[in-house]
Structure formats: structure tokens, C-alpha cells
Length: 412
Ligand SMILES: Cc1ncc(COP(=O)(O)O)c(C=O)c1O
Image (cartoon, rainbow, N blue to C red; front, side, top):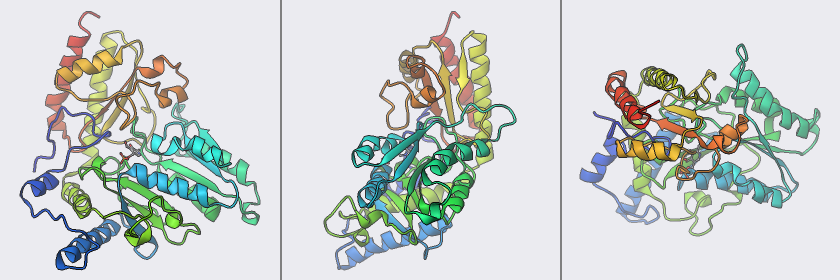
């Protein structure tokens, strides 16, 4: 099976092409359009698609069915907003919400809303500029633990204070992974005083163990269009024993679908595409091979920019945990809009901003976090290639990319 539809498409973190299996099904399969709430046989068939997929997802992500609930919704923006707003609206007393500057806007853009309701918000800087010998996991643990410890105090089991922690498992721009084991440690430490919400959107097929979830964390949120399923479909695993339910304050009221958690006619075709995309692409995925492509690509880029006397820095390069398909480059004094337009004309599609915000030219929050000024913080490009790109594919594609760069920077 050929998994790369266009090898020059380098914007997988923004959205991935439909998986070949999903495409084939849409072209040739028996596409169901029935309403899963109807009692006739077609409706029952649609309902079975939903139930079978839920079971599949529990198996695929290795989560115990009796401890979690799986709810289908539209994309991750809806899932994440539902969780955050539900907690914000349903708390009798104010709480602390912790984000990082590099989180996706679907989380961090809730800041004003939360503050208006009287909650505290702490936006931390991630320790991406690690010094040699420093452990990424330890630095990360300390960065998040500090505001939590400060807010909850030492005798947190004696009070009712709560902290909501938004955890971007893989950062959409830089592909840096915030290992789940670190969050697991924080959860073990603070128990029910800490609500843990994992934005797992960028993880499938990009890091090892993306489908081995820790069964103590409260929420995991996914979006189909990031791994070859249709757009507008996503799902959330919610821990059942947490003392607050995400959907105790559902954002959408109506027909009571998804056990009343998320009203609105369900989307069996979208749900089926989730299963197809995960199931059919897994056997072809090789993290090590894809990471080797990234390393080769980075080396070629560094050599090229060095030869042109240009300052180019790979963001997160020193971090031990990174997605196999993502390179985030800071190019000082380069007009990246012009570069991207040129590369586009040469057939290469890549982006400059965070995933799904690619057309903005705002200063990049990760670069601001690293201390760059607002002008320089605009000089970034992100290459996010197919997680199925092999080293033999890359032997052709990387030189083509470097050739295109040479045309853009001819005289330097
Ligand atoms: C890390 C992350 N979280 C959340 C989202 C939002 O997902 P959706 O496009 O499904 O609303 C994105 C989209 O780019 C993302 O990259």
C-alpha cells in the first residue's frame, strides 16, 4: 500500500491527507448515511458502527473499558473547550488553570474566559533551551510542579482547592514531546486535587507508545483529521472515577445523543473513518525509520544554511523526546512568507505558524518563550512530513528540497 499521497506535502501537523483505506472506502465502499438514533435496521447498523469503533478505540489505546468513557464529538477544539469550560462553570470555588505558552489556541485562548469567571490562570514557559546534562523529564516536572505546589500548598489533601492542568503531549509546532510519564508522576503526587487533560492530537503515528495510555489520567482528546480520518470527527476518553464529569455541563444540549454528553446527530461515517485510518496504517508505521528521515533532513538543512552563512536553529533539537516527522526551524533575518510562497510554487507545502493557524503571521509563542523579540519570532518555518516517509523516499525528496532552497538563496 502506498501511504504517501503527495511526498512534497510537508504540512501533516496541520492536517493529514485521508488514509488510502478511507479514500478507497469513500470511492468504492457502501457509504452509510443513516441516523444512529433511528430504530429501524439501517439506524441499528449505524449504531453498531459507533459501538464497534468505541470498542476498537479502547483496545487500540489500551485503556480499560470499565474505567473510561469514550465520547465522539467534532474536532479536538470542541472536545478541549467542553472539558475546560465544563470545569470552569461547574466549580463552586475558583481554581487554578495551568497552560504552557506553546499550547494550542484551543486550550490557551480560554484564558480570558476563565479569568472572567474568577479563576486563576498560570501560563508557564517550557524549558526548551536545555543545557547539556539537564534531563528533559526532570526540567519539565519542575516547571509544572512549581505553580501547582505553590497554589495547593503542602496540606492539599486537607483543602478543596483544585488545579486543572492542560498537557500538550506533542507540541504542534516543534514536535517536542512532553512525556506522559511526567504527567503521571504529577497525578500520582496530587491525586484528585489535580485534573489532568491531555491534548493528544499530535501523537498518533509520531511518537513511540502513542497508543499506550496511562490509566490514571483524566482526559485524552483526539482529532481524526490529524491521522488520516475525516475532518470534523474526534473523540475523548474520560476517566469515570474522576469526581467531576466533563459532560456534567455539556456545551451542546439537544437530542441527548452520546449518552447525553454531546447532543447532535452522530456521525457514523466519520467514526468509521477513525477506525479505518488507525487500523490500516498501523502495520506500516516505523518510528525509527521515520526519525532517521528527520535526522537526515535536519543534517541537510544545517549544512545548507551553514554554507549560506545564515543563522538557522532547530527548535527543540536538544530535547530527548521528539516527534519523528516534525522540524521547526528558526531562520533569522529571512522573510519566511516569501520563502514559503516560493517553495509552494516549487511544489512544497509547508507552514510557518502553529498547526491550524498556518496563515497567520503573528509572532510565534514558542520563539517568544525562548526569548526572541517579536520580529524575529516571526521567522519560523515548520516542516511536518508524512509519518510513513521512508529513508529511501527521503533520498530523493531531501535533495529536491535543498535544490529549491538553492534557487531561493542563489547568491549568498
Ligand atoms: C495540538 C492541537 N490541539 C488541538 C487542535 C485542534 O484540533 P481540531 O482541528 O480538530 O479542532 C490542533 C489542531 O491543529 C492541534 O494541533
